[in-house]
Image (cartoon, rainbow, N blue to C red; front, side, top):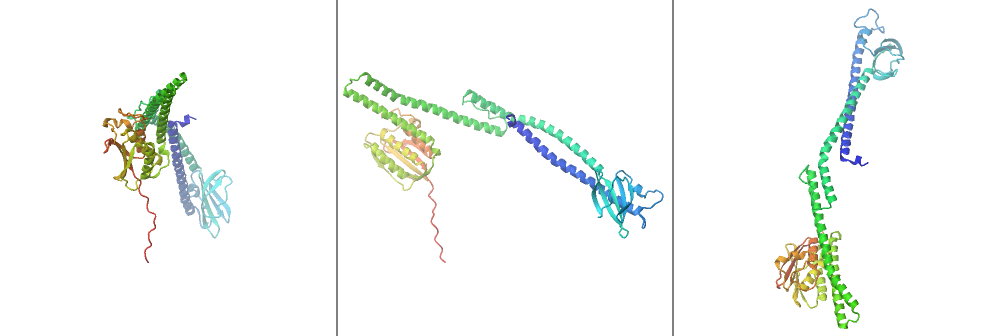
Length: 465
């Protein structure tokens, strides 16, 4: 069954099928044309002989003239195998000449050409009324056996030529298909090397073969590149996550061991250890929440999108940030009115929550955070500024990676906030820019494409009559 699935076998069979169908049609037309021409020649000969017989052999009062044989006598006119003539008077056959077969039927009641079957063979017949008053009729018949033999011979030649052509076509198609699929075989061998070695850094040759093969190889190389990048990012992400979780888990285990070994520990020291354990547990919870947020962002492309009013999201995020960071003064700057973004509402809220938390945690203690929303070149411009120490320009790009933290960071964190922001901005087709803040700290600018306004559904006013 697998052999029939071979491309070479399928192409060869398709070529044979096409040739066989074309040959059958062409051969059938050829044989039919030869048979039609043969019958036409027989009819033409019958008409000529009938004229000569009636003109030279029939008299006004007799069926056939007697007398010496001459060139115009009926026997001379009927010379040639497979032809005979019958003369009927009043419906009875009164004379027969030529190659008369056994059981020859009487002439038909109607004049003209017809095909009759005599002794297992077809004959072509021409009947003419010579003397209607006396009921004198002449029928000339010629055997179609020579025509049928010629048609059978031609049919045999066509079949023989067709079989030879099919054989040559099969060999040629197999050979040409072998040459055509050779680049595919090389491509398959290259893919097998990649699969067998498990090394996604290997690449397939994309500079050989026809355009389609080179294009396929280039697409496969691009797929391998993306898989390699994805797997490297996954390994790095897992390693970073394990490293980040190992530290609080190690501290938590050390504090638990200390409590186990010292059951009579003073209350003050016991409380300090429990406080450290609570802080480590909070750190792990925040880390897992950040990881979950990143995972949800990876699947956000499959979630339903809707039109989201960005000003409402900003108001909700500010309300939550003020509760989480009561010591920070959050200011709401310019509001442009409506700023509708077509996207994932929870993702936009997650982006704003992380921006505000990052500004509150890394800004000046007890400082201020300003949020503004504007329109810029048909896009919504969201700005978040703090009055903290800011981030050096050479560190800003690196901080967009998961678990990356600035060298001067002094407050606890997971290093996932700006990575989540960058992910959500990319998912919504926007742009993220880290720069200087007018307040002196970090200024974050997020530009998001806005949704077009809904079409008006109001019906036009009727025109006055």
